[in-house]
Length: 97
Image (cartoon, rainbow, N blue to C red):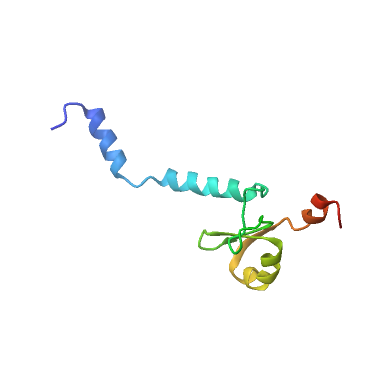
């Protein structure tokens, strides 16, 4: 069926689970979570600018504005494996403390 042994090897490799893809994906997620939030990051609840990012054990990520971050803080600390909070930047951005 296949004249080229190299082609057969490539097909066999492609049909095997790619563990390196999972590792690369985890590295990408970790890099994303380590990055600061931007004005493009929006609250999952209301759409305002996000100042809090919660990474869940399931791998999901939730973004919240300062208001909804405060409102859900207790629950987030129970279910999140990491919380990245930039609410301290609110006063700095507006010039108010």
